Image (cartoon, rainbow, N blue to C red; front, side, top):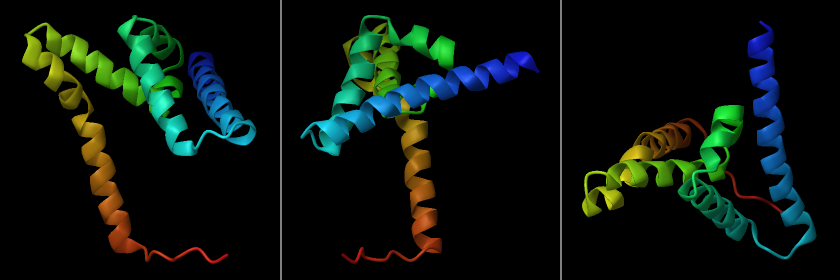
Length: 123
């Protein structure tokens, strides 16, 4: 029971810290949110390229893999594993590793688009 609670706390703290950093960048800089997403994705990719992000994933679990930096980690991890089978594997490994998550996002987005009606934002 205590182990599960500790796991949730670690995930909440790490995921919250990542989101807090992003929110501070949005609030106090002129960087657009799209650029921040790209920077976080690249940060996860670069940290995993140096073998550092996996320690954060081992510590926080979903708190480190759910934010967009976790997607960069996933791409890098797939490319590293794919590179063991050659140059083509290095290019396709990241796509193979991320394909399930991207497919789920597209399918569930489509289902939501069928269920709910989009409304334009009124100023």
